Image 1 (cartoon, rainbow, N blue to C red):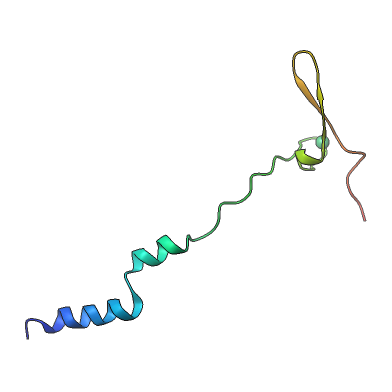
Image 2: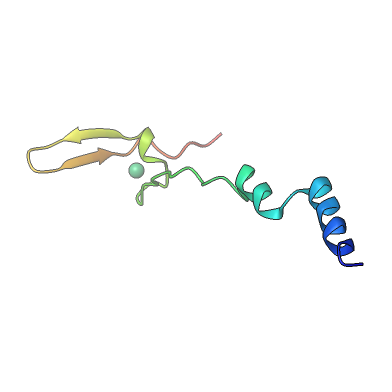
Length: 68
Ligand SMILES: [Zn+2]
């Protein structure tokens, strides 16, 4: 009767596998892409035109909020 629990446990492992391995293979959720949103127009910074000035970089908002 001593080896019965461990055999049952091994059977469970062979069927389901250790829970920790599963989380390693498949992370709960992918890291969200970091998108910088402009505070003035609410559009991503990628859509902006960057202007390099003498002392800083200014971003120019696109023609306006995209409305369709
Ligand atoms: Zn903007």
